[in-house]
Length: 104
Image (cartoon, rainbow, N blue to C red; front, side, top):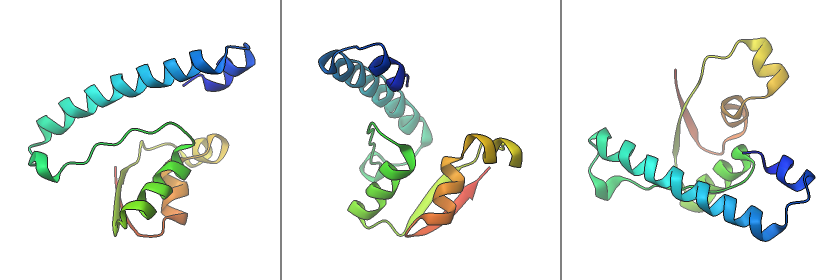
């Protein structure tokens, strides 16, 4: 988050890279806790955190893994909010190269 603000504030690339690395580690720790609580056997879990535009990163992940199904949750935005703010879920439902299971 706040990537644009960091660049606009003339923060150097090394510092921004440190922020990305710190956030990635924090998110990965949270994902590990979530995955452990899910009850899914650890050998069936793949955790992946990557920085960038979410729809593009997810599409790249689908392609690189050959996934046949994307399961994604929707936050229940109104149509107006989704139109004005954009929606990662909507983008992926319309453009994913595999089947999509949408969970509310």
